[in-house]
Amino acid sequence: MRRTSPARHGFITALAWSIGLLIFFPILWTFLTSFKTENDAIASPPSFLFFNWTLENYAEVQSRSNYLKHVFNSVTVAFGSTLLAILVAVPAAWAMAFAPTRRTKDVLMWMLSTKMMPPVGALIPVYLLFRDWGLLDTLSGLVAVLMLINLPIVVWMLYTYFREIPVDILEAARMDGASLAKEIVYVLAPMAVPGIASTLLLNIILAWNEAFWTLNLTAANAAPLTAFIASYSSPEGLFWAKLSAASTLAIAPILLLGWFSQRQLVRGLTFGAVK
Amino acid sequence: MATLHTRSAARLMVAPSVILLFAWMIVPLAMTLYFSLLHYNLLMPGTEAFVGFLNYSYFLTDPAFLQSLGNTLLLVGGVLAISVIGGIALALLLDQPIPGQGIVRLLVIAPFFVMPTVTALVWKNMLMHPVYGLFAWLARGLGLQPVDWFAHLPLFSIVLIVAWQWLPFATLILLTALQSLDQEQKEAAEIDGARALALFIFIILPHLARAIAVVILIETIYLLSVFAEILITTGGGPGTESTNITYLVYAQALLQYDIGGASAGGIVAVVLANLVALFLVRIVGKNLDA
Image (cartoon, rainbow over all chains, first blue to last red; front, side):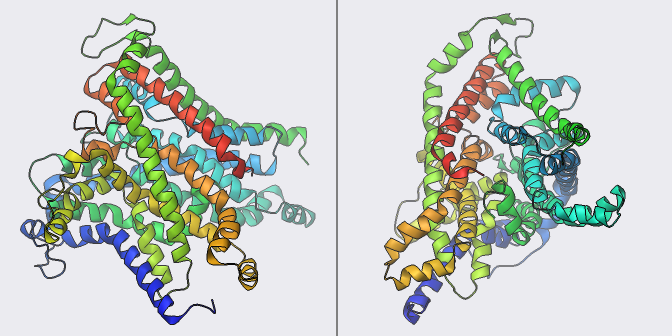
């Protein structure tokens, strides 16, 4: 970049930072509002930093509605559905990566195509079956559904990772007289772990933020944070500070996870097409 | 290397995933198809009867359907336009060597990780509220009349909110793709005297084609089914001005208990999604041959 003049460089820097802050602003605003009193939250002109900082919203959020229960629900659903999906998908991805047949490509494309099915096509029967089976507003029902909707992504993602494991290394281990068990524990597993970890991460993020099935299949009991926070939309007054506190807690862990795993995210979200 | 033995083992390993996904796809679809041919209302139990394609003719001739179809396409098209064009521009900007590049990048991609219900509530209340919202305050500061966003520009407001969620996704993907562009190639073109525009059109854009295709494909899948943002901000209204197909089917099923009619709508949504998918695979799929 020899030809960039200092003025131009300064302009580009200022522009990039301004746009970055502008895009991030709603999140920052939510964060700040969570420390305001309800009066400060709707004050006009709005106060950006110089208000009476308070932590009471965070205490209120918990005491009003047992916030921690919904955190627990979110954690259970995100981890449960992801771990189950990985359990089912690892063998499939493994087989397709190491013993591909002529139909492997078609099976993978077919799995991808199931993601094209809009959820409303399945909403009614799933809702009625869940009602009849007593699964509405239960964690197990929600775990099952989220596991199924993310399964194609999990298989794909694992497949793209496994395919990069060199097969030669297995043969080398075999030549050295490694047994099958040793081969798996000492050679394959260490190479598969990063791929599995990335898949885990991406799916926890997706499941944590899923907001079609969680809203339609849960009520007071099994509601994860997505559905719980939606209950703040009822027009029972303006509780922006409390809404902000509940929101901050709900998005902070996933935002941090997302920030730390950008690269893997790109790969997973694009089914390995962009790395 | 694949012996008969390993091949049957491989089949056994793939089977659970395939069976689960197949069941998840076929069972609900078959049931929706079956319900769509019935008169079936949860408020009138015992009156279920076969009515042929009556539900379809009701659904398809309902003025709400045409409006929702239009809204769906506007929503998908609007957000795609904003996120792809904006994403390319932002990716080019963030690819420049500036102080704090990594931090700006984190700021820009952050909205993608915010759950849709939080996004919708924060925008609806703290930003777009006609009296207390920040936009209203800004408008007053500029001497303008504050806009009542969800009453007067409901669909536009939803496009704006959803675009805020997906612009970061497009930027992240396109930036990653951009950074894999060979620097030497770029510099060679610069030495040859290529102007910025030529560099963009002949080197950068072709390099990004595959990533753009991926962004369009994935965003379309999700954008056809936008739901939480509508439920929380406008509830599809005023009237059906901001109702998309997904929300229309939801409202018919879980608010009016009309299972037959909603199922017909669900099948229409599936057909629509498949048409779009077919179209997309034709147009952008060319870039995707793995």
